[in-house]
Image (cartoon, rainbow, N blue to C red; front, side, top):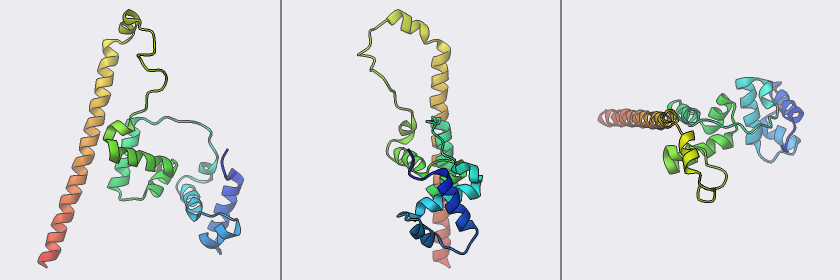
Length: 176
């Protein structure tokens, strides 16, 4: 269950976009404690239209590649998590979660967690398990790991290039 209905969100955004009232006053008028929520709705509407405010009850799974694209976009365009989330139509807390996991664990933090019983708890059918995992699947898994590693290294290179450019700019400014 969500805290605010779709109709309420649309009402808030429409009232703000029509002008004449600030976000602070709007939030006070409707008893909203956090004005960043209203700002998020406004950014979503500006980026994707009013359809983006419709409540979706789907648990979508995002690939590691997509998560890296979102984080890379955040860094290369020097935007806030809020604006990046609005750009991709995601929840800002989800992007923040990905960013935190990436900072702590790297790409491994973005990998989906394994659910269910552990292998030790399950009965071992060694012959049938070996038959199921084909060479192609193993190669595909290895390719995905290598692609993720390459994407991570490209992101690191971009960051280092930016850092180098900033240092050169600072040295230029000191010389002048």
